[in-house]
Amino acid sequence: MKKIIIGCFALAVVLFLFVFAVKTSQGIVVRTDFDVIDVAAKDIKKPILGLAFHLEYPLGWKYLDYEVGDYFKLDDQEPVVLVSDAGGKLIIGVSLKRGDKLPVGAGDIIKFNFERYGDLTDVRVTNANVREMVDGKVREGDVGWECLCN
Image 1 (spheres, rainbow, N blue to C red):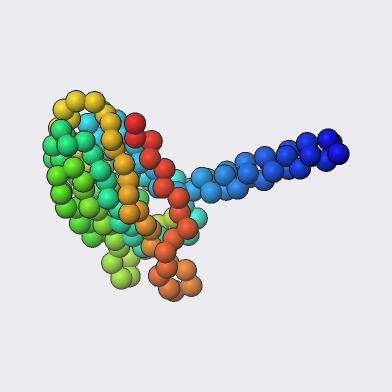
Image 2: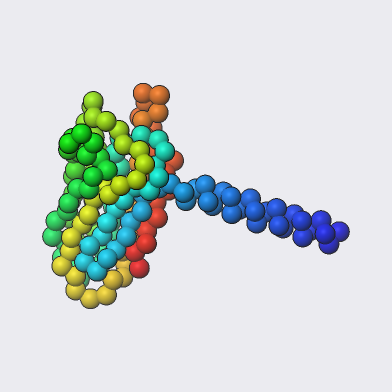
């Protein structure tokens, strides 16, 4: 009986690790580096049309500007980018236009520059979603978000 329980536990751990590895092997990664917050794609397998999210930052910081990365800039196309600063929270949307090439794989999506006052705390991503193109139809993407922020 003890061997069965140990065997079941070991199988559960292996299954958990497999599911965790599959879920986190692709996604959107948000990183902080002193006064910059970077958003990047990591091993995306399905073509992405766009993404939207809220980026909460410390109230003591001052948002300056953003720089679009190379991920959506295939063949020199420019994505549509909307960034609204709501004082402590950026509301962000990045999307391609009809006829643009859809990216897969990895690359820098967007970088936000701040004047930083105080510690690097309370940076969070909320309301995050990705839109994929599958069989000619737009649908919500099955892409995880990872915030390496604090």
